[in-house]
Image 1: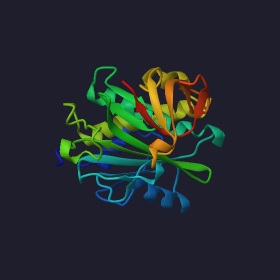
Image 2: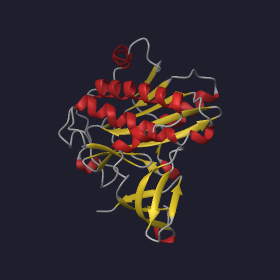
Image 3: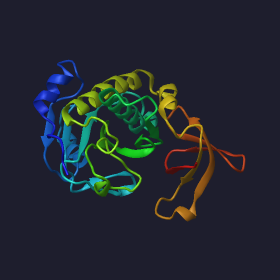
Length: 263
């Protein structure tokens, strides 16, 4: 059950400061999906930088139209509206750079020992090798909505997936407002870096637990037995696609798939 106060949008905007890319911040105790809300607002002409946040989604979505479920008050779902300048071919980096930012923000706020918070390509943030955050980015014309859901104070029974965790379960600080300030500050930085360069390969590789290890990538998530690749993930290309040297000696470049880290 909830153990921390909701996000205070006024305090959050103060923590971010006047020069932040983000704002205004719309806080919703409950909503269907923050991504859906922000997509609708973007289509109506909402200003870039708008943030929609909630601590309970009743219709949250993940990749491949999966449903994201949570218990009221135990997580924070956030969606932000951005206007990318790199060409759309490089927009595959958007979910990856959100992961880099969430990872950094969580580490900065909690003081977690380096190496505890890592990434799994393409859209998961891991804490002690267990999922703490999922990411979903969507294109809206010439802009994009970047969304993520962060497990804050879920108990073991409340986790949406058995391989998940929360800051509470990991014994880390979990006050929502300063946590989200740290994440949004990191996202401000990494989005600006990507805007200038169009890629963040070196920085991503340093914190991605997928790179350098044996993996199986399921290409059809509904029917894992129908198509998969096993091999060593060697890196990501200039557009953020995963590069895997498979067991048959072929180099594969994957833009989507469900990754399983092999022990």
